[in-house]
Image (tube, rainbow, N blue to C red):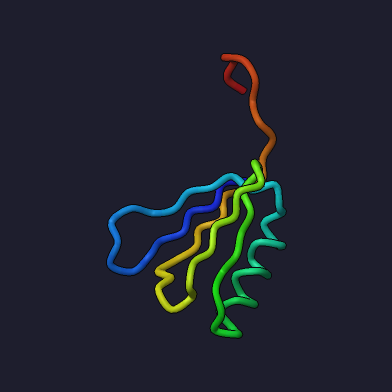
Length: 74
């Protein structure tokens, strides 16, 4: 699942692939925002991204879909 994190006053967004479900990521974001702590997410390769919630602009959680293989259009 692709997750995009926008940071205030920064032109680039942080993009990561996560193996977590959309609901799990939304729960992590809500918990971090509610407590005022940092947002901690792990990508599918095990790397960790830590962003202070005070600078979050937005978090976009991609739709859950399986990877397509091949060139055929469905």
